[in-house]
Amino acid sequence: MPSRNRAAVRPTLVTTLALTAMLLTTFFAAPTTTAQPADAVTGVWLTEAGDKGGRARVEVKQEGSEYVGRIIWLEEPNFPSGPHQGEPKIDLENPDEDLRDRPIIGLPILEGMTYEGDGTWSGGTIYDPANGKTYKAKMSLDGAEDESLDVRGFIGFSLFGRTTTWKRVE
Image 1 (cartoon, rainbow, N blue to C red):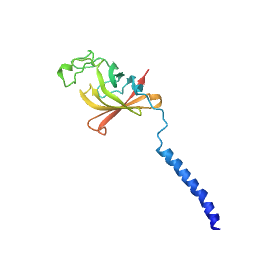
Image 2 (cartoon, rainbow, N blue to C red):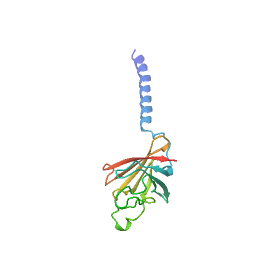
Image 3 (cartoon, one colour):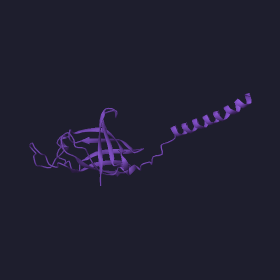
Image 4 (cartoon, rainbow, N blue to C red):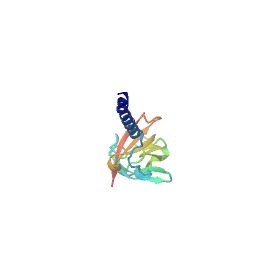
């Protein structure tokens, strides 16, 4: 009788160990998602409307090993009111007085971004022409077929910042 119980226990123990090994392999295995190429972020992106104006289109390009972005279109290209009413928008909020006459269209706002893998770029900065401030930045592709780009500007740690979502433009 004891050999009968031992025989019944052995397959159960083997089955349990096999199932545990399969679960652990599945849990700790690398994800099977397709890796995105570093240049997947390149192209034209439509930003969300900001606090001080409409949306913009930003063209992201690779320059050397880094990715940079420039404003190439504004929903509201001219000042709607104030002393510059009707004139093309310029970088009035820039802390450097010598740069305040730069046109917003053509303005570099993303600089020094490098690909970290897994659809994430970081190590660069983003400039906000609405307030003249530059922040550390990171970006990540999101959504089906990389149609959304989450851009996070932050001070110090990425915990202290704000994320905006840009949509890819054909």
